[in-house]
View 1 (tube, helix red, strand yellow):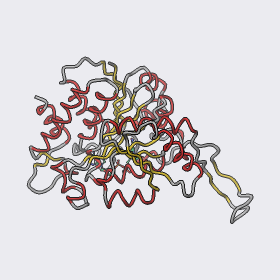
View 2 (cartoon, helix red, strand yellow):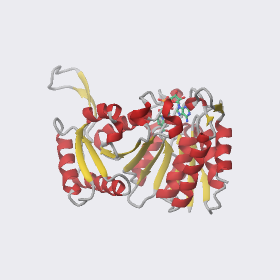
View 3 (tube, helix red, strand yellow):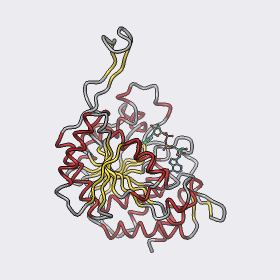
View 4 (cartoon, rainbow, N blue to C red):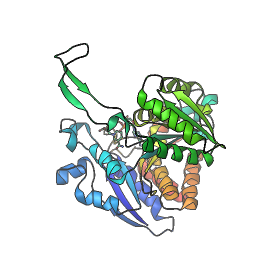
Length: 356
Ligand code: NAD
């Protein structure tokens, strides 16, 4: 089992170090190789995703990724910005299915801005299509308008598009995931306005017929945004396109209180995957030793389950995380009165200890 370890920038290096500690005490044999990515790679090699890093990622069963980015790179041309490394990895490895669980841990019910009764026991899985939609559709660009409301004015445009096979494969991923959970898929679209999402809805309905044991419902994205805060426990698996998924998965993340708790996985058809916390590089707290490493540690658990076939070890990590929360240990982002404030390293070490 080969793992590419790509810590990246900002808090990325601090949190990945803790996840690696956890992986190292499981008694499993991994080959782990570290490489630069993002701003760190740009500084060293002039590119956020150097050839050597991409080759390592391609040759690995899984990638454990920290985070990339810093405001200081905002003025770089787009192709050289740290965030391009993630897009490059997704594209080159064909990582089309993004899994974003939003789980509310019993001990953190008060960290949410929603009433405890709305979110206690919450367990949603958002599945976001990751390689299509308006983020990748061509053509795109800037030009002088020849029609529209202001002919002759500068305009910018992007193209929203999905092909039938792209929708079919993400639909299968969602129905299969739902079979292992609450057997309920909500497909989120904007079929009332967009052709792309009328096709999306038609294909979801067709594929849904192959999974009669799974309930399928459809919801417009504006309503889904409302229902996520009104009645979040209605949802089990939510499947949607790249842009709606980007937005809704962050909304779902905040239901649970802290983005520092939420793992994610991006998989291709061979179950090769990139595992990373749902948050970014948090330049505001980088280097201070206060970042919450649990999202990254839980991402490592997802990696064991989905790409490395080590479900038992994944369970052990998830149980250990619950144990440290039950012990009252909290990084500042999830701290509340009556609990014990700890730093990044102490939290990582507590998980190692809780593994027994
Ligand atoms: P962010 O997720 O980095 O931070 C948002 C807020 O959450 C900050 O206040 C931060 O301190 C806090 N936070 C994030 N992770 C935390 C953790 N583990 N523990 C405690 N607090 C945590 O988002 P941002 O500030 O919008 O972006 C910062 C940089 O990260 C930008 O350059 C952005 O492009 C990049 N980014 C990268 C990724 C990625 O690598 N996948 C994702 C999102 C943003």
